[in-house]
Structure formats: structure tokens, C-alpha cells
Amino acid sequence: MIITYFVRRNEGVFMKDVTIIGAGPVGIYAAFYAGLRQLSVNLIEAMPNLGGQLSAVYPEKIILDLPGFSSIKAEDFITNLTKQLATKKEYIDYYLNEEIVEIIKKDDYFELISNNQKVYQSKTILLTCGNGIFTPRHIGLANEESFHNILYAITNIEMFTNKEVTILGGGDSALDWALMLNDIAAKVNIVHRRDEYRAKEGSIKELAKTNVKQYMAYLVKTLNGENNILDNIVIEHKETKELVTLQQDYLIVNYGNVTKVNNFKGLEIAKEPFGYLVNRVFETNITGLYACGNAINYEGKPKLITPGLGEVPIVINNIKGYIDPSTKNKIFYSSAADNISK
Ligand SMILES: Cc1cc2nc3c(=O)[nH]c(=O)nc-3n(C[C@H](O)[C@H](O)[C@H](O)COP(=O)(O)OP(=O)(O)OC[C@H]3O[C@@H](n4cnc5c(N)ncnc54)[C@H](O)[C@@H]3O)c2cc1C
Image (cartoon, rainbow, N blue to C red; front, side, top):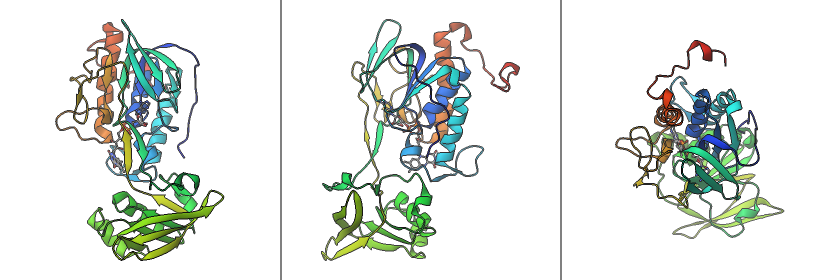
């Protein structure tokens, strides 16, 4: 569970220096950095948690390529970012379960309107909305939504201790979970609709050494249970039509994600095929509207956490210069004496 270190909500319309849309790792760090530069911030997130893909898709996965961490759980990294954000809480308001659907450009500020009809005002905007709102792909069976023990993301691995678990999917993520759960669950099944995995060779070999029961080329036919608890699933072999019933305490669906791409009403923001088009200081074609992280694309851009975090000081320092031109082109060192211990 991602811990929330502070909750601070101002109701009503307040003009902010910058409104950050999307609280993935890049949006959280941008909000902190804006606070460090003494900019007032609204951080707005459509999902119920901070953390973007790291919270929604792989909170329990280990990340190996973040500077300064030889290995860290995605969830722990978000917790660390959130703690750092809290050090600047006097500058930051954040809102969860709020999707920005419309942006209106006024003379020298923007108005942002959410799906809940809330209105936010801001001198500038930073889009850190990734590829859009990230939701896990479902099985697609009619009664699926009624069962509470069908999971699309794992937020607490301990809950599977001594349980029977079935994983649906055959990609890297499904195999990683099968390997991890093999050590703690009583029984693990993996059901894949193809006859070959789409996962790393090493994981496939590792899986063969475990007790995980593998069902290849099977599709889920029915979900059975009562009182909102799934008791078993029936799977069917694609060719032989053989039916197998699998009992489980939890069913984990690992079919990847679908993204609902943002199409903000009110503005024509220029795009590249895989993100917003920005200049060297990450400003879009609309003055005062910036973007960074997975939301943008430029030649050679890897859609990873570190490049997105690296874009943050560039974009926020430029927003600072836009709002207060006297600060333009001045290097800001956080280690300067007046910042120490804040
Ligand atoms: C399984 C998996 C494993 C990965 N492993 C690694 C790894 O090991 N190392 C690495 O560097 N990268 C990894 N990545 C990639 C990494 O997760 C992304 O690069 C990173 O999440 C991008 O961060 P972001 O903040 O730009 O966007 P996101 O994390 O996508 O966050 C964007 C946020 O914006 C919100 N949002 C979107 N539209 C709106 C709106 N209109 N209103 C309000 N909120 C909105 C979304 O809900 C979301 O929370 C992995 C990705 C996946 C899927």
C-alpha cells in the first residue's frame, strides 16, 4: 500500500504558479522540485494513489536501474518520492481521483476542469500524464466485476501466503509473479492463451524448475463463485476443447494495460506519434504549457523513470523563469546554505 504522508486540500479556486497533471514518479518529483523553487503547486491525479505506473501496475516489482539504488521495490521508490514531496508541503496541494478533461487558455493563465466539474486556475501547466490514464485489461467475462478476489495489480504480496493462486497471462510480468508467488503461495497455476510465453528466456527456464502448474493454450471459459467471492474458474484448451477446473483463493489477471489517451478539450496541443511535441525546455506549442516524462517524445527518448526525472529540473527551472523573469538562466543549487535542513 502506498503511504500518504500528507493530505492537504484547499477547496475552491486558487491561482497556482503551476498545475501538474499526473502524479507518476515524474509528476511527484516535479511537484517537490517546484516547491523547492518556491512555486505554488496543484498536483492532480486521476487514480486513487500517487505513483503512476509504479503503483498501478508493478508496486511489488524490483527496479534495478535507478541511480543510488542497487535495487528498490517500485512501491518503496514512490514512498521515498512522497516523503520528499512532503518536505515542501507548504507549497503543494494534491488531489486524487480527479481527471483533468478540459484546459482553457485565458490571457495570462489557464483554467483546468476535472471530470468532477472542479475548476483549477494556474499560471502554467506541466503535463506529466504519461501515455494517459492507465487501466489494467480485464478478462472480458460478464460476471467478472462482481468478484472481489480477482486482482489486476498486486499491492501486498503477503496476502498470498499459503493461498492457492491462478495467474492469467504469459508475459514477463505474469512469469515474474509466478516465480515470486511460488515461494510463498500454497499452489500457483499459470494460464496462458498462447502455446508460447512472451517472456524472458531466463524466466521461462526458471519457471520450469518450480512447482507452478502451467496451462498453455487455454482460455478462461467461466468464472464461478458466490457472494462476490470467486471459487473456481473453468479453462478450455483452444484446440482439444478439454475443460479444466481450477480452484483458487485469488485470481491474478496479468493481461497488460490499456491506456485512455488524453484528449484535453479546449486546446490543440501539438503531438509526436508517441507523445507531446516539446522544445528544448519542454514547452509545448502553447505558451506556459509544458510537458515531460513519459508524456513526451523526442529523438532517442527512452520511456523510463530516470530520463523523466532528469527532465524535471530543466522544465521547473524554466517555469520559474517564466513566472519570475529575474531568476532566468540562474543556476539553482539545492545544497546552498539557505536550503540546508529544510
Ligand atoms: C511492468 C513495467 C515495468 C517497468 N519497469 C521499469 C524499470 O525497471 N525502470 C524504469 O526506469 N522504468 C520502468 N518502467 C517504465 C516506467 O514505469 C515509466 O517510465 C514511468 O512510470 C513514467 O513515469 P511518468 O510519471 O512520466 O508517467 P506515469 O507513471 O505513466 O504516470 C502518469 C500519471 O498521470 C495520470 N494521468 C494521466 N492523465 C491524467 C489526467 N487527465 N488527469 C489526471 N491524471 C492523469 C495517470 O493516472 C498516471 O498516474 C516500467 C513500466 C512497466 C509497465
